[in-house]
Each structure stands twice: as structure tokens, then as C-alpha cells.
Image 1 (spheres, rainbow, N blue to C red):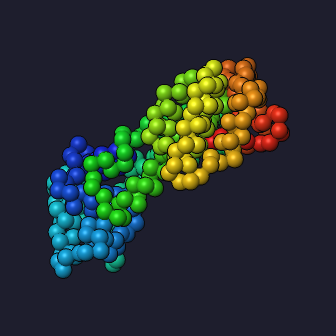
Image 2 (cartoon, rainbow, N blue to C red):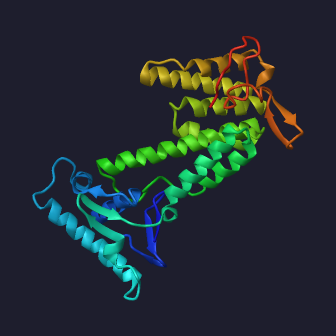
Image 3 (tube, rainbow, N blue to C red):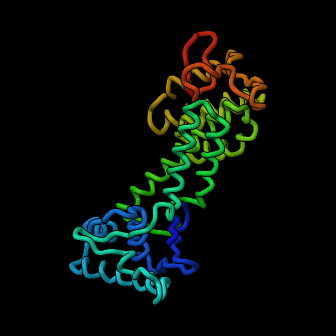
Length: 293
């Protein structure tokens, strides 16, 4: 069984899809898939489907949805398969459990690759870490569960997955900035900063990429826009680290510039080797360590 949730919901047994067309059975499948190998309680499934206003027939209706899923799984498995549909979608004391191998889930592969990429970055291997994170991010085909109308339980899961994706993106951008790939990042960072107008780390990375690309004036304009939005929406100033980056750009701090590192054929920040590799720079005039994730 192959299950994909990093985009439209897709679940297959061999070539056959086992994704129902009706919205509520899709929710059941999505929630069971995200908890692959672990039981999902009847109460959690009922909360997902009907929130705090379940019908009296909620549990019976839920079981009907499970039977629909089992019929689709059984049809895809065929009569000669060793496993039956009740072996794949099991009834357990608290509720139901979907059994599938770990690698059957795209989110499991994403988390494994992202974790390996993070470990490589922590070891100082930016090129390897970036490559692993790119591989992880390629598994995304759009917003998580893009074609499922989520209830409260799935909505929390979707937010969790989106946060994991943003974290992987930030880590990848940090590595590629240290490798001197600032120009290649401009389009992607610009789109993401526009999509997340309150996200300071993405704005800081775009500020640094613009500055290193000879577009410091745009970097300063970006900071002013971020400052205005934070003030208008939240009544806040940008964080200390973003303000320090802004000040360093204003004074033309040379520690922000990328320099050639001939040892690996790439580019790295002038402060490579200093503590806190996420930044790639240290405020030269003040000596203050500044992180731009």
C-alpha cells in the first residue's frame, strides 16, 4: 500500500486507488493514514467528522465509512492476496488502525530525509545537507491533504506538516546561502516572503540574498515592509536579529559578503566556521553574533 498526504490524498494498493470520493470517508482514510500503525480512537474520528455536534448515529455511520474503505481495499487486493482488508484496516479496542509499511507513507520518507539533512548541516556538510533537504521537499506535491476538507483533528495535523515543511525550507535556504547560492534563491524566497508576510526568518534570508546580489536597496525596502506589517498586525517591532541584520546592511558590513571557498568549489559566508552556522555572518563592527535562519 502506498499513501501520499503531502499534496492531494493518494492511496493505492498496486495500481488501484483506494481513495473514496465522498468527503467524510476521505477524512477517515486521511486521519488513519497520518497515524499509520497506531490506533485512532473512535472519539477522535467522531470529533474529526462532526466536531462537537455529532449525530446520535455517529459511531454506526463511522463504521459504515470503515466498511466502504475495506471494500475498496479488498477489491484492490484481490481474492488471492495473503492479506485481507481487515488485516490492513484493523478494528482495535479503542478504534481503528491502518497497517502499512513505514516507507509506504510519503510523510515518513520526508521526515527521514529532512532529519538526515539536518544531521549533515549540524556536521558542517552544507552541500550534502542541502541535497538531502531538496530531496525531502520534492516529495511535496502541493499543500498537505489539498483535496480533503479537514475537521479539527486533521486541521491540526495539516498545520503540523506545514510547519515541518517551512522548517526544512529555512534550513535548506540557510545552507544554500552559506554555499553562495543567493541569486538562485531570490525567486523562491520572494514568493515565500510574500506568502508569509509575518515570517521574520524568511524575510531575513531574502534580505541577505538581495544584499549579496547587489540589491541592498531592495533588502532595506523589504525590512521596512516587514516592520510596517508587524507593527500594523501585531503591534511589534522586528526581532533583534533581524534589526541587527538591517543595521549591518546599512553600514555595508563586509562580513555579510560571500567569499569563494576553493576547497569545495562553492561559496560560503565570510563568517563560516564561527559558532551558529545558520547565520553565515557576524556583525563585524559590533562583534555581536547575529542569526538569520
